Image 1 (cartoon, helix red, strand yellow):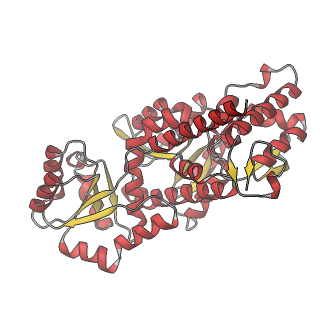
Image 2 (image 1 turned 90 degrees about the horizontal axis):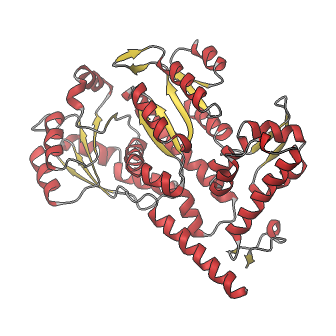
Image 3 (image 1 turned 180 degrees about the vertical axis):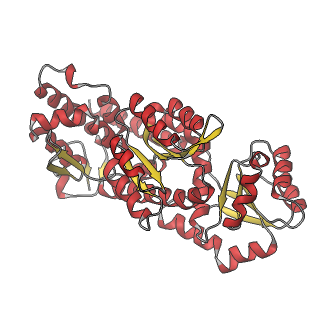
Length: 433
């Protein structure tokens, strides 16, 4: 019997290890930056681009930071692309001997599938690309330099997510955050903040759990992906494709719909989401504070784009509504009656909370949403299809929840060697050192 258990534990470790290696199969390691000598000098010497990107990767405990190779003219860019492999190419707006539009077309002819992004030098360049929008379709996305190296981290992670999302959702059940935004300026400000907060909150959860090093790496690779849509139709396509993996939708109010800018496209999108996925957290963003009332009427969170506290507002939403914070147990009136900071405390609360609280959260899929965001995929997937009506009494639901949590917990921890901690001294499935 002991031999079989050891064999099962080794097999499970290998399976987890294989998933770890398979997630985020595409990673940006080599970047070609095409910029004038002056722009390259400013970025590297004054803004210390490579140093700051390395610092961001180190601070967020990410894998090895990518290497950036700079060239200053189109001829050199085309030559090096033909000879060397690059995972991503970034063009700046001003290139010495050719427009970025023309160079982008030539790069697409040479390497049709290479991720190609355009980085505008400043806000005044936005008008130049929006006036002739169709000419810039060679680029996967356009950003504007805001003086912060985090924009490069966002560009890298955006590219990785876009390419990895199909495989990672199917294989690792990775969740998806949909951001609907057509403003180059706002996207360049918002996306770095969103990625930074997701990674920081994921790291915080990892630090709170008894995970071996492989599991920690897996959890970082299994962080939510961020997908960006610029039109109503693009947003619907992403929602339909990743419906069961969506963690939330963050939407602007005004963006293109049916080929024209629609002042209320965001409200229409929220209506569609709530008809299809009524429990999905949604955020409505606008420069118009009056939209706060309409967001509230649709049970959506409102974020003011004019706010000086944008980062704090976003952090609050992620922490409270996406499962990165503590689980707040409430009665059927919404009043707080308990708070679980960890899976261990969550399991304890399930045994003692009143029936009304159990039904309140189960009816709204709060349990599965919180567990899924925290990486408890197996438990969440087991609970998601379950309805209160499936059980004759709330006690039957309670026993089911407790049993699912217990079985998955034992499966995850069987044979694991962890550092001694008083909180797990009574756990039979751990090997404690």
